[in-house]
Length: 328
Ligand SMILES: NC(=O)C1=CN([C@@H]2O[C@H](COP(=O)(O)OP(=O)(O)OC[C@H]3O[C@@H](n4cnc5c(N)ncnc54)[C@H](OP(=O)(O)O)[C@@H]3O)[C@@H](O)[C@H]2O)C=CC1
Ligand SMILES: CC(=O)N[C@@H](CCC(=O)OP(=O)(O)O)C(=O)O
Image (cartoon, rainbow, N blue to C red; front, side):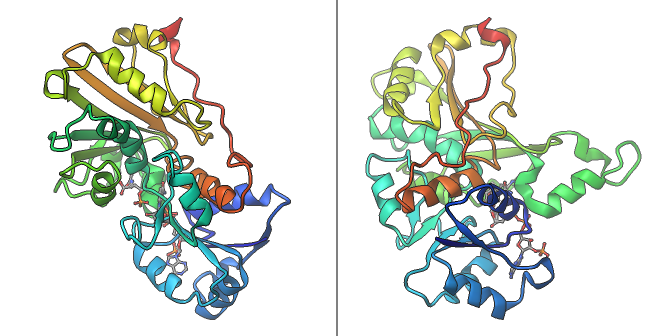
């Protein structure tokens, strides 16, 4: 099985490459850093490969897809370019009961955005099960590490001279996408089946990777005014048996009021943890993942495994984040 990672020297590409290097069931086709943008070499490698990962900016991803003429080459794209394109399959295996089969048979798979993965995992089952009305005015916040912004943002954070440098403000959390038009909104709406895009505000912080996306809900405005426990049960049942998505048991979050939610505790894994927090009047859904794991390269590898008919966990860590001290 020949695999080529276009963009192998970028943040997502490097991680995918690293994970595949450790395996002996794939033959990795490589391009030198010097030639990484050479169209002739890339075309040759892409058309020679059985699987191509595209880890490029959106426009470069569109151009790369157009260069693939071998009908046997299957593509996994990590950019935003094709996520809501009906010709492409959304690479979130846990989304619907039939999604794994769609991915297994797909020739074009788009890997979900990191914020969108967490949002959709927490919200979609509640819409599907009729708890969250489709026209509920959903809002959401995300706390994320700076590696989500790729090489450019990593460099800004890592060369910032804290104290008196120009970038000194980067040590403080920064809200961004302040026009409330983040590029993940279309996939958040499409794959939750909400009637409207959520009001979504991300905040980037001075840590490398890790993410928590939260969604507050007012329970009396949900269908049949469910209790916190009922919401928790719906999500727990939905993800029963999943390797990489776990709904944290309520007894493990009892001490929450005295503690905080650490966004980095799924780092290094392909796990997503969903928490149902709050009280009987207002519930807070929270989903924690590694933006470089289940939020990008881990998810891409999981989808490749499914497409190749392998166990979806090959090469991925399923150990879920350790729970904070609250449960002690
Ligand atoms: N980082 C993350 O957490 C996530 C990223 N993504 C998506 O994955 C994609 C890649 O992101 P990320 O890895 O962060 O980005 P990076 O900027 O870290 O890496 C992109 C890489 O692609 C190279 N590149 C750019 N244009 C071309 C081209 N025309 N031909 C070949 N190579 C090219 C870049 O080279 P150079 O730097 O020299 O221009 C760089 O090495 C993006 O679409 C992003 O939206 C998705 C989920 C999460
Ligand atoms: C900190 C930061 O800038 N994060 C990126 C998320 C990257 C990601 O998952 O999304 P794409 O695959 O769609 O690029 C952002 O919010 O745009």
